[in-house]
Length: 186
Image 1 (cartoon, one colour):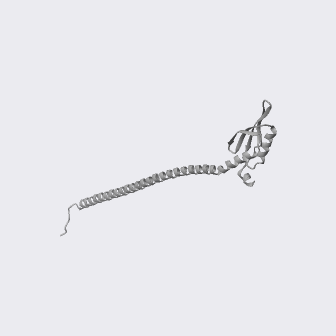
Image 2 (spheres, helix red, strand yellow):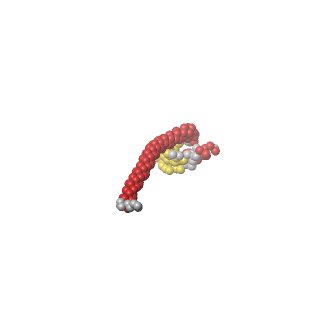
Image 3 (tube, helix red, strand yellow):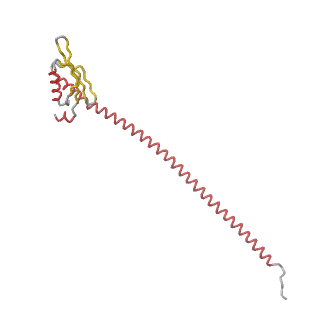
């Protein structure tokens, strides 16, 4: 005799497939969740590493900025010292020049010419004096012109002043100091 199965096999098969589908769906969802979690954790780890690198770079930048500031301060001090050294060297080199200037100044002043004052501003001298005659003022100007230390003199003021029988001439002249090349050539 043949056996007939009267049990609802199709429904059992359908229930089995639905159970398998549900299990597979849950497994896929869990795997997808784990993958998302792993990706998220990886990204967080990368972000943390990048933040650490950024902080380290920022610290290095701060250190370098501090060193740059120190270097600028040192350069400013160096420039100030170089300027001081230049001034000192200029003063040292000008020492013998002043002696030569005074020696020449005394040598070229003619008799009957009296210097009351002179003032040096830069490379220019302003000389104020008294002479007993105009010819003595002219002689003094010629001596200045011939001197290797002085340039061409310019008479600014000459006035006559009488005191009893004597007549005096008050004068003011300006003369530039000759350049070092001119004084060395002569």
